[in-house]
Length: 443
Image 1 (cartoon, rainbow, N blue to C red):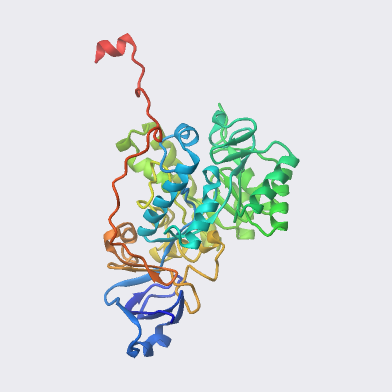
Image 2: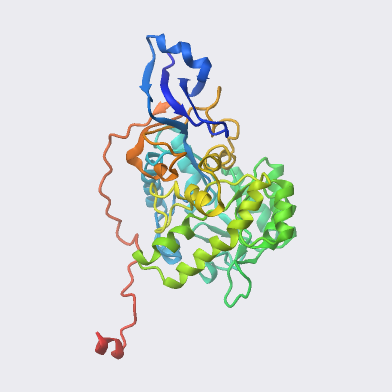
């Protein structure tokens, strides 16, 4: 017999942009079968589980459109690339997936992962072996030998960490086909990167247009979309013209790039949470004060651009880049909404849409999750306080009354276990300075 759940008398924020209203929601098996007026008559049924949502607020589960579940919060690229063992990373990823779920995140996109762990974790979650949110995943990110944002840590060929280096047309074709054969939901390309002594703002384009077109055409022929890491105007233009389906960051756009984004309505995931956390709290955890200004400036310099494209109807998606020491799992998945409100100038409701309805695009489940409507899959949060008044409510786990994933209430009674990082897992520097005689004498 299929289980029925009645969420009764809650203030419903349905994620469509409609005004909130008090009403009921009926869930049967894993779907919403009635909501609002059509759900009134079910309260008299005997075989129905009731959740009293009086004076509470009901909304779709958060979808994080940019999360790296396999990284396990490294403090540096060196730690990420050289201190992660494959099997252990897979086990720890399963633990971290539950932390993400308990923060009210019912789905996330992991565009690239160490050792392509994301593909197997997604399948383990779908099969019930591991508890965690819905996932869409990429395999290894495609990089050229320029190295993306990791520079000289990336070899000229082969694999390192999450990166697969491709040198020519044949290698691109082989790798795209291999990833799709192995089950990738997305193909990710590091379109831009960093080089020593570069003069441009942001990053430089490290792929040609023809190379990007080859990736997009090949992936699309096999039914798989392409997502790009892009931090400059040329990269945005080339990526969209090549047929890319979603862009991460998309900062430092010029007028030509802005016009093209507005014309094509290409989904954008700004991913400002990392920068916002580093700017606001970096010094507390030992980050350089220079970084604080650099990352704050990236937000300031680009927010007007994102406001412009948002006003033009371009879908912005909330993604946090959770998985680094600056963005640990289960802690900051609400922060992108806060940045959208405080820096881009959205209303709280608009930011919620970016983290629910819009972000369903990153799951490849648009029209199935992200809103509370008839026949949608039942991924639902019930909150003690109103996120339309204070968006940071979504960051306080004590104010999340109920999490429902795929029609089932998540058990949050199991206590979190104490974690001790395995030997060699974390970077262990000898020191944070060089011990010259001058330093010794001045100590």
